[in-house]
Amino acid sequence: MEPRDAEQDRADVRRVRAGEVAAFEGIVRRWQGPLVNLAYRFCRDPGRAEEMAQDALLRAYRFLDRWRDDSRFSTWLFAIAINVYRSHMRRLRPAEVPLDSGRSIAGPGDPVGDAEAAERTLLIRRAVAALPARYRDPLALFYFLDADVAETARCLGVPQGTVKARLHRGRELLARRLSAAMERGRTAEAV
Image 1 (cartoon, rainbow, N blue to C red):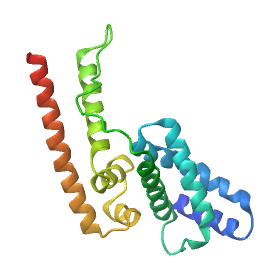
Image 2 (image 1 turned 90 degrees about the horizontal axis):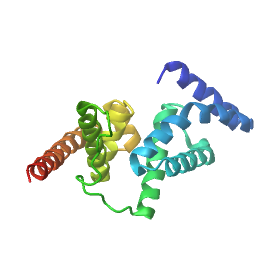
Image 3 (image 1 turned 180 degrees about the horizontal axis):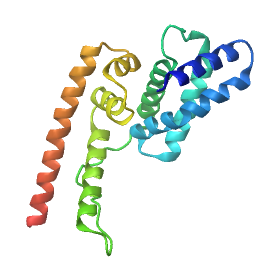
Image 4 (image 1 turned 180 degrees about the vertical axis):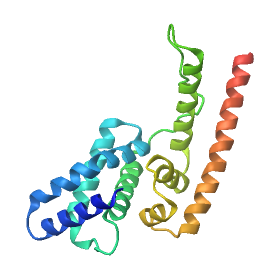
């Protein structure tokens, strides 16, 4: 995030707190896309992701008076969003999908390399989605939203060392699951 965005956030928050409700529109414009993107990492459903992001923005608006101007607004907003998304996911309890189901099949004329890349991407996304939240959330913030360790720690409300440990453990779990899924794929192809 650019420093200019941080200043725009501060200015918009001050205006909303002063009674200019329309100033929240600037915050929505800047953060709706990243919030939907993060929500999609949780639920894998574009419609539900938009709903979850809207709920996060609504909660942020309701509790705007609790944001302390001494921290980055984006960190505070993403912490709220993660809590909202976790609550949504707890209520939904989606069925876990095995990593090897729904394999991508190349259509006519598709190069083999593209099909294999698409299959790997699908496997990775499913493997990340299937991780326990304690590992999935730091991985999503760190890799998909390009947050650094410090910002990831602030968003999750845990120490930086915990984030580093969870990133490490999450990568290990992910590597094991992907390796097993790829091995199952090779075994199935050999039969």
